[in-house]
Image (cartoon, rainbow, N blue to C red):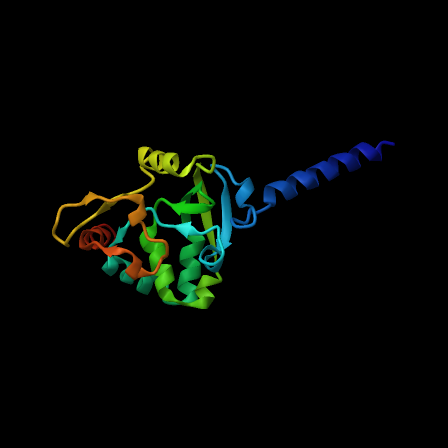
Length: 192
């Protein structure tokens, strides 16, 4: 009889260890994710079939994206090293993941156009869950929380003007974004 409680205790410890050690899969576990969760996913899963990873800014610095692609995503080895140290912050909403930072890195990953790199694991960090919000409320909350950067320029040297959420790209191909020279300058000035 004395062995039964020990067995039950060991079983409970094993189950807790399994539960804690369970890595959430972003796509498979989308419905159970909550703010504060980390999950893993391959880029090819986020760009095919959904839920998708979508941008929250209409412009990127093309030159900075090219620099990041050359530096971090020109080989599978370099990409794996970069993706192991990075976490990509997202908001859950409208059946998708909305990236709130690291847009240049994701565009550089896409620019690699390398199927081996697209098959690498990347980590996503859920910073907010707005799945219960309707479309209008979703975008209002995204703006209130500064999770969307709705600025664009009419020309390279024009002052930024307010953009609409309908101006946001629906893919990560570089030409779906506007080129913002100032974003490239900021990237080079702060990182190189």
